[in-house]
Image (tube, rainbow, N blue to C red):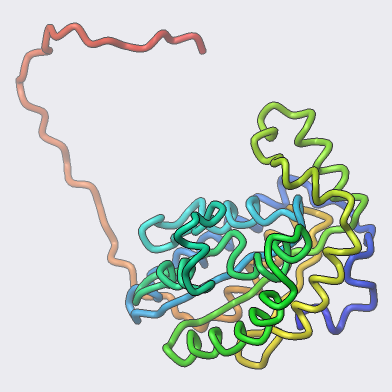
Length: 272
């Protein structure tokens, strides 16, 4: 598991100096260039990449995914964030609604929460039985082995945040009109179940941290640092090369003698 060499408890708050915006943007720009190189290589070689993000509410999954995808093609990097299952989906094989989103050749699929909902929120909030949880924990490694044997590069990340930082972020969502949409009724219900989620996390790691699909743990106390650390790590996990890029120059534009139209364009008000 990704945190085995750490000298701190996995959910302990670790004080580190905040990363200033200038240093963050400079590092992120370099990593974005590498992600574009990776993107071209994945398409060129027909690779299939699946990246799973899990973690407590407010751990920074969405922001990390945005940092990964903001400079690449959404046709190649696909983000999957499924809503609650429908009644029909509840009657299916549990993994079925996730399997249909797995990558084809030349694709990188990122799951913002995944099949591991069963080991986390569904278990803690009582949305499934203990027997269903155990069946999932027994079956997930076999399903993931099948993915890997089919050629999928599977990366699983757990973003860990301390209870103090989680509370700060959730309160920020309440107070910030730009973030209130991130706060769900489930977040409030889950807030006082820290220990239950810790037990669920530990059971999940024990059952599903395998040689073919290990868990990597990233400390998420500092959002900027965790984004840089995860992008750096995932780039190290997928061998890629920089393909030659054809130099492109814009030709000299030839402007015609077309007269300006008198069409009454509806311009929006320019208030800024």
